[in-house]
Image (cartoon, rainbow, N blue to C red; front, side, top):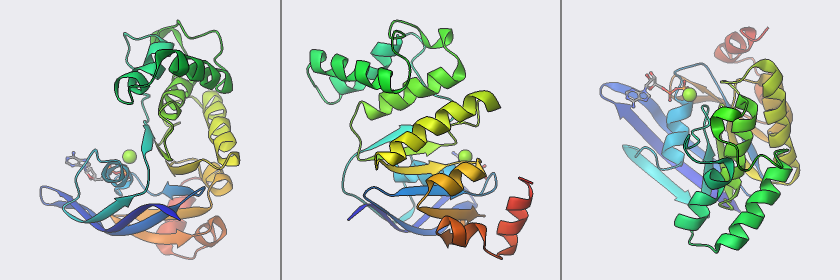
Amino acid sequence: MSLLEMKNIKKSFGDTEVLKDISLTVDTGEVLGIIGPSGSGKSTLLRCATNLETPDSGEIRYAGTFGLVFQNFNLFPHYTVLKNIIDAPLKVQKRKKEEVVTEARKLLGKMGLEGREDAYPYQLSGGQQQRVSIARALAMNPDILFFDEPTSALDPELTGEILKVIKDLAAEHMTMVIVTHEMNFAKNVSDHIIFMDDGYIAEQGTPEEVFGSSNERMQEFLGKFG
Ligand code: ADP
Ligand code: MG
């Protein structure tokens, strides 16, 4: 069953057409990797998929709820780790505090952050902050989790810990859409890959198909990663 379907999505900012007829589906349990050069429209695509932007035309159909993990963590700086995680389940989903706190502690354990619930974001490393923001997204029990370059604000040694967390989620069959510049990670974790170029899906398929493609723009892009 497909959880998300985007059909003929177009989006312009002023005179700049940023998405030029994008169609894709995401099935239950699938990991979709999105790669492509800076400025090719990857973030705009995620923002349209998650209702942060409205497409100019096309259709989006969801069969479930979604969570979003940003490049720069976007934690509330004046909230503790625990409050960052429980805030939306309490306010948006109106769930019982006891239940939400129990679940938040479980998620913190899963993210390797047990005992840090009273810390503030500034007291944590970037990698720890990103793990809190993943826990926060998971606390809403989303059907799909979207990641927009979750490691690009992190030092290389902190990148690995986030990629590991995402791989563990994939092993649990969490449905995910992941924009990333980590090519080996994209290759290993994705069931399906989309290569965006200049607002189009220039190439898509299995990791083997996309990374083995003779598409010139794809080869040029991959060349930059050595
Ligand atoms: P990517 O994530 O692949 O780097 P983006 O989706 O962020 O690409 O951006 C694609 C293009 O759209 C860029 O040229 C960018 O400058 C432009 N763009 C993105 N968001 C806006 C906006 N809110 N207003 C104007 N231009 C934008
Ligand atoms: Mg982007």
